Length: 390
Image 1 (cartoon, rainbow, N blue to C red):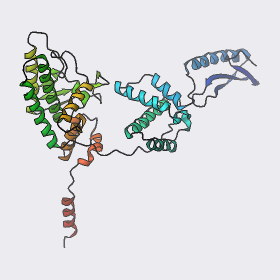
Image 2 (cartoon, rainbow, N blue to C red; image 1 turned 45 degrees about the horizontal axis):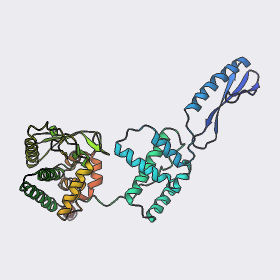
Image 3 (cartoon, helix red, strand yellow; image 1 turned 90 degrees about the vertical axis):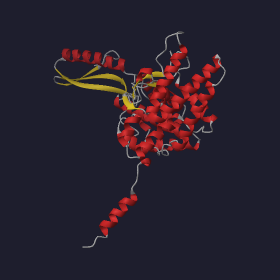
């Protein structure tokens, strides 16, 4: 028995049995029509009522369903349009990666035809084309996230990248040698002294303020191992004595939580704490009665009412290191220095806490090269056991 389009159909199967069929719309993976079939027992009126009920339910399913994901590009577009609990920088990176991937021949494939061998071939092609390793890693990470989301949302039948091995690990994180850090600290102190000797003027005041902030930034980075976004989000009240509370970070120039979403408290060196307090007192004193002193530790303004953008903060630091022939030194490199020093001394848990890693396995995986090895002691001990005479 045929009915109006979209309202389902009835087929008498003999006796009091009827088959009701309704269309649920196109399958998101294959694009083919998906049909639901139900057997109803009773007379024609009962079967008709069941058909109307199932047709209404099918209409609701069709209304909620999006267009079929015919290609990987379609999947990426739908994925980015949905709500996700991402940091602003994560949104930014995924958007950039998705735009690049959507222009790649790989994106023309149906999601069901993506597999570890296909991904391996794509990675090989990207490398041959000179795509940086960091960009390739972002592409793979983006595809894993998008496909994992689609599978959890039942938009695809399986996870196509299951079984694919991760990319080759990069070289160990490179730390800044302690001797270089000490030399930069001395250079920063010298720049502050030189700036303070300039004839008084507005320009000289800005030079002094900038030099003092660079010195404090360098000291904090080398002492705490904090991330750049965490340093850029520091407020004056975050330091109490020598206890520093790190509870926020900057992501794509938006102040948010730390990278792991968790706060931590650590102790800074006495020299670092004193430098912080002295600088803040000097900045507030210079402002005098010209206005209220603001809450941010690093700022381009004399009253510290607004936060200095992290890009500007990193630029000041980069200009400073280049002036002193250490342009290879970055703020993140100082974070690796803190980690390497602590791990090499056997303080793995202390390194985890200071760096703000979610668990110790992250610290161990990234800095296992710095673990102290006592091979000679072990060899001597085994030799003693093996050469014992009865």
